[in-house]
Image 1: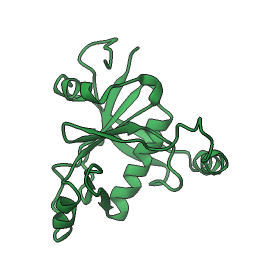
Image 2: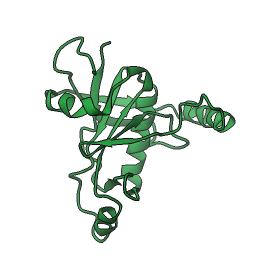
Image 3: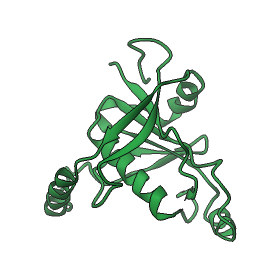
Length: 173
């Protein structure tokens, strides 16, 4: 199966994710969290796209850094549609093989996000529901399926940068 890997062209400067194997936490400013919501939405609607959000080397968040460390330390984030079947243990190898990409702009659909939220609320207790984030941490990267975000987003579009896979038709595992 073909796939692509994308990541924000500009880092989410004031946003950090603490390792959920410890206590876990997500800290960010309005802009960073809005961009993160857009990336969740993009991943949920792009079954052949792996979204890599590098958060480990972000701008230090002052006194919040001590809290993040107490939660297990910073981790990056990888969002991938469950149908792609990416194994978390394969991510470090895939990350090493990435090459420079080209900028793209992604639009989010706020009406669709609202509809999805209503659907999610109706089926959240369903045993077959795959929209729960079931994260796994490997190589300082939290990986998980890409559920549609509950609400919000950064507005009509969010710039992200694409990273090309190592070769056409590359396999995620």
